[in-house]
Length: 475
Image (cartoon, rainbow, N blue to C red; front, side, top):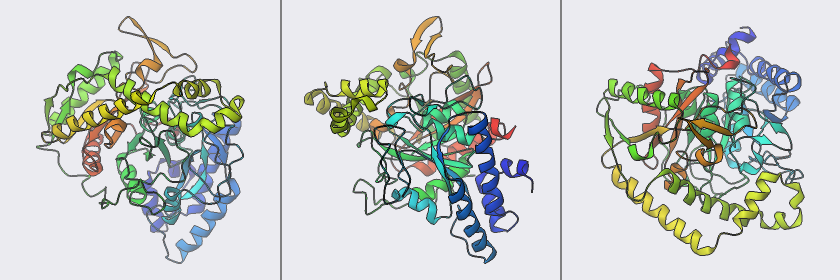
């Protein structure tokens, strides 16, 4: 099979062919490493911070020998993957995209990485990210901005921008990112990929440089829904090194994919949707709701008390900035010059939040959880846009929507901050293209530990509308 055919394979397809011995881990890994070399060294896309060429080939060779001996480690045997730079890789600098941690070389892999390796994944390297995961652009002052494969003059979102761009550009067959406020889903939306933020505690976060410990999660980023579910099967579950991880039993997240949606109920919150959205975003999400209705779903409208996108974003910011500034307090005093300007300013600002603001924000968080818990007695999942806009020009984060001037910072968290506040799982999937041909993302928010339901609904929608075979890296 030639390189072009190998690149076209989804993760599930590649895994099946490896198990049938029709392709080898070595040829698959070499194909992706060659693409990385062109993308990073010739095109300067800055989607990777470090690539482990020799190690990846050595692991692929060992996996090929196991393949020939009919011994397979698991569903990821021979699958080339990227990992966000805040995920610890033993013996490798794991800097979280920052000069502050550029001497941090962990002695052990993060538990989530251990699980990937145990299932047979080939670690290609560390992907670029917004410094310390504290931002939504992946305009990294130390490594350069990650470029969106759909249009190299545009951003790819953040903070897991390098991971999303690598998947969209086919320099990784899959990748892991982290999501504190939207950092898996924002770049997934901008890059036309699938990104899952699991329920808080569903995936261990030990060995991952924190941003806000009560919000942090780690999630899979893939071309399509089935691949995403396969990865979460490997990632999920309690870990003895992580007291925040849940002991809730882990189902097979692929088991509901393919089941009909007839009778499923969708929630929407009209007073919190489409207030400041680009017209193409609103159009795509409204048409997506019609697709779900054609699949047998019903749509129910909700109006929550004291709930609007501005309040959600403010509460999320108080908690995140307080927790982030607490973790970075020592570094911020010892070497403030090592931070990029935007992150340093955010961390300094976080020290001005008073304790009562933080406590009241956490009280509101509990109040919001209760409202959603009540609503989930009547619906199976909620739908909203992921972002109010599509990929923006690099470095130009002002925009005009419906004749009104808007700023990226004021809009980016409108929808994505709901899931971290409530602790619920949320998946972003492509649902359209704007007038420039850039992807539009839609997110499905589920009840706690209801990821399987989200995969079922997302896969059914994907059967009707998908762009995983139109991603830039496949053309």
